[in-house]
Length: 140
Image 1 (spheres, rainbow, N blue to C red):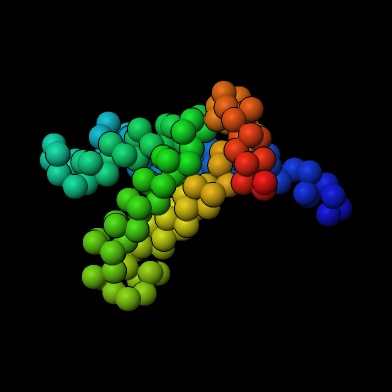
Image 2 (cartoon, one colour):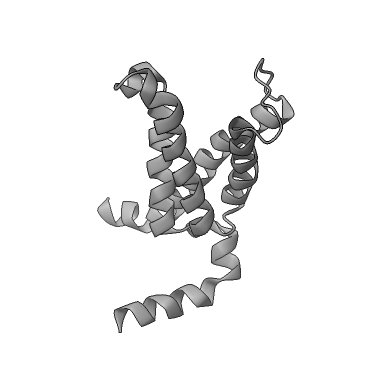
């Protein structure tokens, strides 16, 4: 059983990346494109508008698994910033201040910075030889 789980871990990393990115992407479409419908429409170049652009573009790149590590780094920072700026001042308890999703996104994206996009990513397809050479240099 453990061998089967270990064998599929790289695929499940890709599934985690894709599912988290799809949900994150939906926050960007809601802010900037009005879908799904929302009463919230951020003013051009405001902080929520910039967050929406990062959610939309960053989410799309993570869905594809393209430039996963640098994009995940930026998005992890965005979510940390969002938590401390928008949620934490409301209450010290994430379940009460609505920041639990921001915390979870922050740490999922931080994990992707270190783990990469997984086997089902454009990064794996485009840069497959680069990763093995980099890993060999780190071990040596």
